Length: 87
Image (cartoon, rainbow, N blue to C red; front, top):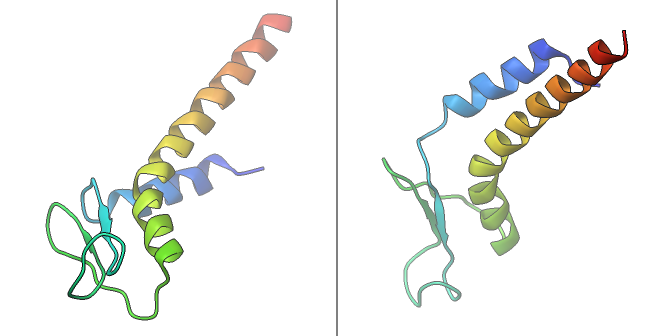
Protein backbone atom coordinates (compact mmCIF):
# COMPACT_ATOMS: atom_id res chain seq x y z
CA UNK A 1 0.00 0.00 0.00
CA UNK A 2 1.21 3.49 -0.81
CA UNK A 3 0.95 6.03 1.98
CA UNK A 4 -0.45 9.51 1.52
CA UNK A 5 3.00 10.98 2.10
CA UNK A 6 4.47 8.76 -0.66
CA UNK A 7 1.71 9.81 -3.06
CA UNK A 8 2.35 13.44 -2.17
CA UNK A 9 6.09 13.04 -2.81
CA UNK A 10 5.42 11.40 -6.20
CA UNK A 11 3.06 14.23 -7.18
CA UNK A 12 5.59 16.88 -6.12
CA UNK A 13 8.31 15.25 -8.23
CA UNK A 14 5.96 15.05 -11.22
CA UNK A 15 4.92 18.68 -10.82
CA UNK A 16 8.58 19.78 -10.98
CA UNK A 17 9.05 18.30 -14.45
CA UNK A 18 8.92 20.39 -17.60
CA UNK A 19 5.30 21.19 -18.46
CA UNK A 20 3.54 18.92 -20.94
CA UNK A 21 2.39 17.71 -23.24
CA UNK A 22 5.50 15.86 -24.31
CA UNK A 23 5.94 14.23 -27.72
CA UNK A 24 8.64 11.83 -28.85
CA UNK A 25 10.33 12.24 -32.21
CA UNK A 26 12.25 9.04 -32.94
CA UNK A 27 14.68 9.00 -35.86
CA UNK A 28 13.55 6.54 -38.52
CA UNK A 29 10.00 6.41 -37.17
CA UNK A 30 8.85 10.02 -36.87
CA UNK A 31 11.49 11.72 -38.98
CA UNK A 32 14.21 10.76 -41.43
CA UNK A 33 17.18 12.80 -40.24
CA UNK A 34 18.54 14.21 -37.02
CA UNK A 35 18.67 12.62 -33.59
CA UNK A 36 15.72 11.42 -31.54
CA UNK A 37 14.35 13.82 -28.92
CA UNK A 38 11.36 14.63 -26.74
CA UNK A 39 9.59 17.91 -27.51
CA UNK A 40 8.15 19.78 -24.53
CA UNK A 41 6.56 23.20 -24.10
CA UNK A 42 9.91 24.56 -22.95
CA UNK A 43 13.03 22.75 -24.20
CA UNK A 44 13.70 19.59 -26.12
CA UNK A 45 15.00 16.63 -24.12
CA UNK A 46 17.64 14.41 -25.69
CA UNK A 47 18.54 10.97 -24.37
CA UNK A 48 21.62 8.88 -25.07
CA UNK A 49 21.18 5.16 -25.56
CA UNK A 50 17.38 5.18 -25.28
CA UNK A 51 15.32 2.77 -27.34
CA UNK A 52 12.13 3.66 -29.18
CA UNK A 53 10.20 2.02 -26.33
CA UNK A 54 12.14 4.11 -23.78
CA UNK A 55 11.15 7.32 -25.57
CA UNK A 56 7.49 6.28 -25.72
CA UNK A 57 7.45 5.26 -22.07
CA UNK A 58 9.09 8.46 -20.84
CA UNK A 59 6.82 10.67 -22.95
CA UNK A 60 3.67 8.92 -21.75
CA UNK A 61 4.84 8.75 -18.14
CA UNK A 62 4.62 12.57 -17.99
CA UNK A 63 0.84 12.37 -18.48
CA UNK A 64 0.23 8.91 -17.00
CA UNK A 65 1.67 9.66 -13.55
CA UNK A 66 -0.87 12.44 -12.97
CA UNK A 67 -3.74 10.26 -14.22
CA UNK A 68 -2.69 7.39 -11.97
CA UNK A 69 -2.31 9.64 -8.93
CA UNK A 70 -5.75 11.16 -9.51
CA UNK A 71 -7.27 7.68 -9.88
CA UNK A 72 -5.61 6.44 -6.68
CA UNK A 73 -6.95 9.45 -4.79
CA UNK A 74 -10.42 8.88 -6.26
CA UNK A 75 -10.37 5.20 -5.31
CA UNK A 76 -9.12 5.94 -1.82
CA UNK A 77 -11.96 8.42 -1.40
CA UNK A 78 -14.48 5.93 -2.78
CA UNK A 79 -13.31 3.13 -0.49
CA UNK A 80 -13.25 5.52 2.48
CA UNK A 81 -16.82 6.61 1.70
CA UNK A 82 -17.95 2.96 1.42
CA UNK A 83 -16.35 2.15 4.76
CA UNK A 84 -17.96 5.16 6.46
CA UNK A 85 -21.39 4.19 5.09
CA UNK A 86 -21.08 0.74 6.71
CA UNK A 87 -20.56 2.21 10.21
